[in-house]
Length: 297
Image (cartoon, rainbow, N blue to C red; front, side, top):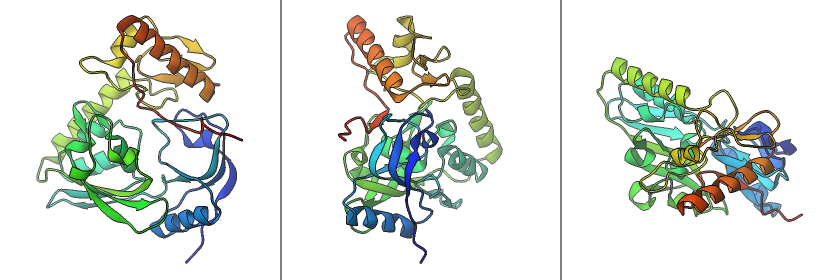
């Protein structure tokens, strides 16, 4: 068995869709389960903290970087499809758009809504990702996970994942998602599914700022309203701090105009939250996960 070796002082801006973030003390990109287990064992032996990232969307990493070991799962990808039963098992690094395409081509209905989500199957399962009326919780059956503090892979069924809007138990536990299993509807017309998938993608690309680095939606929608609408109605589109800008295309996106820092983005998030709360009495909660801001050197 080949041993995987982490690299030291790796620029994390190359691993996030916002293109910001400092250096990882150690970083590795495993391609299989054996390598993942090796890395976790190494981090334990070295007494290092361990954090997991996927496609780097929905993620804001501090300009100070991350201590310990960062495991990036984007090379741990692949999927296993049973087009007769409609069951799909996707490894955690499998991009959601490619999974959506594969399902449609096999005549499996259920993931057309996910075509434009810039994340992985693992990240989507953790966050209960959703778009255009659909979400992971509607179709997922179970996830396989590996404890970050040592142990063997085990399965958690949907009923025990405690899904709610952009929430799951996986956000509160030290677990690495190995794979996610979805139950879709088989026997559908691939041509019609591809057409619907293309329509969804076209809608997202024409209403969201795909031309600049972003993390996707920054805030969860409050009950009975849309975060983007509230921000836009305050006239905040185009507001900048440093190289970070509230998108002029969609107000729930913050884009990197070229030289943004994580500090710029974090400050802009705080400005939006304060203005919305001052005006509407509503605190917008982030969809974005933050890493490294509690660092103590």
